[in-house]
Amino acid sequence: MNDLAQRELDYRRIEQAIRYLNMHVKEQPDLTEVAAHVALSPYHFQRLFTRWAGVSPKRFLALLTLNYAKEILEAGSASVLEAALDCGLSGAGRLHDLFVTMEAMTPGEYKAQGHLLEIRFGFHPTPFGRALLCVTRRGVCGLSFVEPGDDAAALTYQQRRWPLSKFVPDEAETALYAGRIFSSEVVPAFDRTLACLVKGTAFQCKVWKALLEIPPGELSTYSRVAASAGKAAAVRAAANAVGLNPVAYLIPCHRVIRESGALGGYRWGVVRKQAMLAREFAERDARVLGRE
Image (cartoon, rainbow, N blue to C red; front, side, top):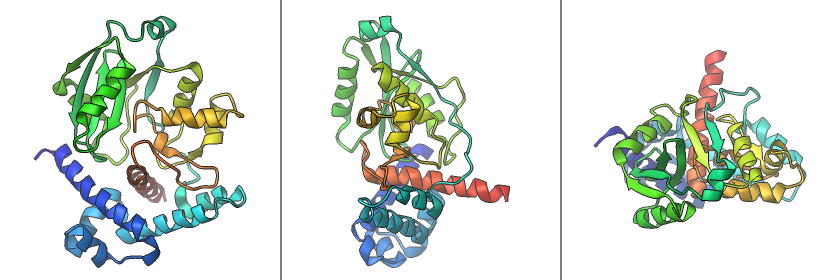
């Protein structure tokens, strides 16, 4: 079993544990109970969870409990977000930006709807589950997470996004991109040659560019994203654009939360969003401690 395949298997175990913690957060299950649910000994579960997330199951449960508390306060004052930040959901210092260049399509390319564009695709294991990756000579044009048995539906969705393009299976080519995107680091540092080719309205492209400005381990809100995209009043439109993000993880829509500080939804599953943020928070904390 290669490294990425092992990490996908580990993620499935962690995903199962996170789902259990979500369902039983009010009961505050202990390590033994959660370990038994994923059919591991407490010792091996503790090691796997801590190695994968960078925090212990107990620490993660505390963060999860805090999130539920914020949801209860969702109808309260706007200062909840500030309180959430003070509680450790985001640090004061900004970390390194993701070095990702996003190239919006030219008017001519948009009008042609990808005519004569060759898109190479492949399915790959990642730290956050199986993913479909679509690439062109201009960069990554599609990245989505795929549940078991949904490969065909995921590919059909991408083909509908690019109806005039030629899709070519090429896992050897896309594996090179997968290796760079999902490196062995918790939060990889991308070089500027890793570009994204996206197709959308001018405002949608501005929103996706605004997402790239949110560093790993930090959070933003839909209103802040709308303001960064140049239309502070278009919060609903910004939220819709975030939900239509065609390149998961690389364009980090998982870093956007509700104004109240509640986690909110995620196109590829709230549990996956929690997992991504948990790893980024752990890396952030490790870097901050390393500077002290």
